[in-house]
Each structure stands twice: as C-alpha cells, then as structure tokens.
Image 1 (cartoon, one colour):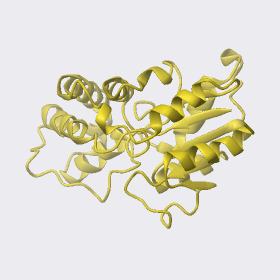
Image 2 (cartoon, one colour; image 1 turned 90 degrees about the vertical axis):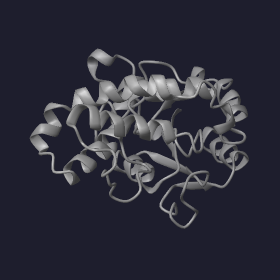
Image 3 (cartoon, one colour; image 1 turned 90 degrees about the horizontal axis):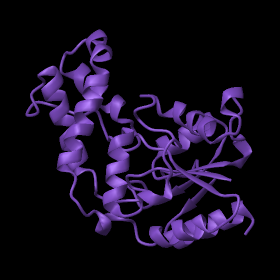
Length: 233
C-alpha cells in the first residue's frame, strides 16, 4: 500500500507562518509586488504554492505570461528564503500521535510512505526535518507543489515515482494507494485520480466539510484504526 501524506494540517499544525512569509517575500523580490498590498483569494489550505502565487500575482495585475516566465524564479527564491526563515525546531507543531503512527506504519511490510503536498519540495523537506519526522518520507518519492500547480496532478505523479519499472511507465496501482489529508482539496485530488482518501480533522475543516472522503478520522488513534482496516492488519 502506498500512503501519501499531506503536510500542513495533517502532519503538522500552525507551522506555515514562515512558509507564507517566504512566499510573499519571494513574490516581492521577483515581481516587485508590495507585500503590504498582497491579498489572497480565500483559504490557502490545500492549494499548491504555485497556485497561491499565481492567484496573488494575477490580483496584483501581473500578466499570466510574466507569471509563467518567472515561476521557476519565484520557486527558487521562496525555497532559499524559507531555508533561512524556518525555525530550527518545529517538533511542538507535530500533530499529536503522528510520530507514533508513522513509526507503526514504518514497521509494517508492504507499506510505502510518501508525501503529497502543495509545498514546494525543498520547503517540505526543510519543514519536516525541523519537525523531526522527515526521515519517514524518502526522497525521489511523492508529489509536490514544485511538480505542478494543479493539485489533481500530484497523485499520479506520486504513483509513477513509486511504481516499478519507471522506464516502462508502470505506476503504483490506484487500488493500492491512499491519500491522507485535511482539506476538501486533498479529497478532490485523490478522487480525481481514482484513489481513496482518509481525511483528518486536525486542520481547518470539520467532519461535515470532509464528508466526501472515504473515511474521516478525528484523531491520530482514529487514523491508525482506519488505516489498519485498509491495510488489513
């Protein structure tokens, strides 16, 4: 089974302040957009970093062509800044019970863990290293905001990376893949690829908002129970 974990709201809580600052400063440094006048369109929860940047820049009057031309520069600058801004210790931000859940999953045979997040990959790696749980998620696996602005594209990217015979294009099977996330966008991206989703209420959304998931867990204990059923253990 391939288990694809979201980060913000799922593995860690309230650990996005410096991340948001880094992205805003990157938009200022690359595009000259004033951070004092930046506005966001609704909640950023579940969006990719690239999508958030695009919405902000369009609102600031930057053309789509210019956004595309400088997208790599924004990503690189955001990642550079976050490396300097991220607190050295985010362990207190880890959701209760997540370290124990990851340790349990890591000890099971035929279970592969990977990330599925809207964070640019370098941001994700730095954030989880500071949180003390990054070692559970191997490099060259998962799907990230640096892979696509469109979150619905991330599950197939993660399955392709986890598959065998990459040169032959053999992806990890949909029936053996589960997304774990905390927003309706996590659910939507999973179902867009035909894979299951277990939603958790540790983020900004409650059970009603997450009702479209295949299962909803209100705690790490419930998440472990739901995953045990799916894994048959």
